[in-house]
Length: 587
Image (tube, rainbow, N blue to C red; front, top):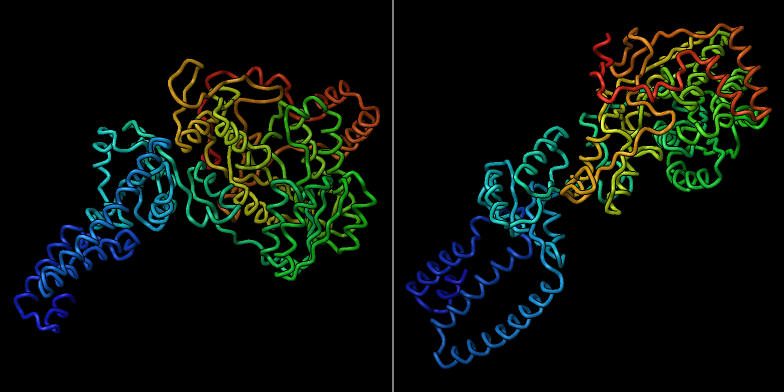
């Protein structure tokens, strides 16, 4: 362009040729040939500006009188020099007050570019380079940073040119991300795993987007839901982690009416505020019911007035140590409450009833687990005596990110600088994301048939050591974990001992008799149940104990009536666990 202007101004072909050579040399010196079009940000645009300005000055120098050029150059250089000098002084003062942390961004995709752009305004963090596996990007400039191959990272770390690495490849499989993190930690650098941009923009993403990667497996697509369209559905315990996610997914299925039964006023209020705008947009009627499942008259009125066809029973006390301290309340809510709700559902003509159970109901070592196992037995008894209502029991383990999960606790402890508390170095648990669990609950409910209370077990993969999860979360936050108060690292992993009622390892079924269903992630367990007479006798005894409020009698009752209950099994667990058996291997 400068050469064209010279020719137009009568400068002659030699001057045009000289400017063309200067333009090419300037472009090479400024690295404009290495800039990817997608990374042509403000900094790279400034390079182009300086090249154009330099060519303009050169054109003036070649065409204008020498005295005028010297005065223009002196004024321009003095003005720019003064501003640049002041800016450098301010930057140096700022860096003394706030030391700059140099970081490398692993991943030169959309997330990496956005992170680099955002960090340019940060006073304490400076991105120095990209690292990416894509060979076609090596040596190019994106967002003002050079893209390097991964093998160059070791040298960068060795020379102390970076304080940490930001892993910005949220779309990569979790297994690959873990492998990269392991390799980077082996170089002696700190690693921070960045969520995707969509996760950062939503409140839900901040909670779940960075949690699900700890599962180490992909989620499951939802195929159920068509049969619920246009129906009236009730969710008990609607304000809890599972209950609220059930409500969200049921809204997406275009149910006609959604009845939210919850005993906590603040939980129900918060859920209504969240769901109301979406329900209005979907044309779904929300009906809040502030009640306990033990209130038979109120529950019956809610079922009849809203013509409820489906009930998802998620209401339960779930905190093991608390129920261990108050066994009467746990048995009353979890066991008797299920009986009351189930009987009322049958009388009101509910088509299907799904109980949300837990792996702690298998060979229970706690009152909470025993109360849920008793709830399963009660539902099986109701199913045998009901010709029109189909009952289903869905059993699964821990849900990542729920109110009772270790993940929010670990996250809080890490934010406070530790220690991160784990009960035992060898304790393991099954884990599943809340969305994945609810997907499969809805699937399993559709497999139920009248007269047969099936126990559906969700395949949650292999159990995970809680200590491994704690270490991964500490490292993902950019810190180094250590064990023992005198260890070397940033965040201590401290072992506190098993609490009353806790076991080292949970199981999802009491036997190896697991039958596959039409969904490969849902298995059916064949387990013994109490007879009708035994169930009636157990319920009479339980009602008397609850009326008297006797905790000693409550524990004796559980030992007498709940199959497999062993209050001492937690304490008798060995310190070194045997290899857990996968559900699929049992088939």
